[in-house]
Amino acid sequence: MPNIIKDAVAVIALTVTASAGSAQEVAWGTGYQMGTSYAGVSNAQKARLSFYCGDSAAAKANPAIRGGPYLTVSLPKAPALETARSVEVVLDGKATAIPVEPKSDIDSVELNWKPSPAFGLAQMKPVIAGLRKAKAIEVRAAGQSASLPSKGADKALADDPLGCT
Image (cartoon, rainbow, N blue to C red; front, side):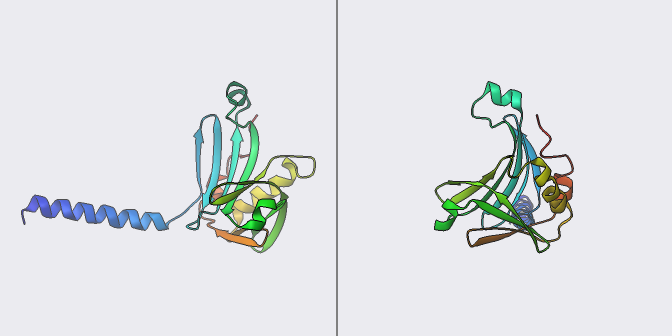
């Protein structure tokens, strides 16, 4: 086999190996898209916990953008989740119940929190502080649960995810 082909095969093998290795390394991430910043994490079972902060000026200009801070927890679809009214965020064994509105999708249910008199920004701030330090993160709702990675939470949540206007 010519050296160029051997080299190409080696590069492809290394790329596939590196991709497989990095796919297993799940960590918190951040980003910005369409007037909304986010910080979140997911697992291999497609459970997800994400904080979003929609820019109010962008939301006024585009009705598809949701303004202000909010949290979405997404879990694989299960019948009881479609009527869930709270999600527990469990940090190192300590649970905090957060009121949510469920929204069913094809294969998942999104549990959405937005600030309210019942559970506002002041109540969510300790949850974020706990997420930043937690070694173990779990979300639970309507008999369903999912463990989520804690790696990178401190960095991803360093900027206040609730601090948008």
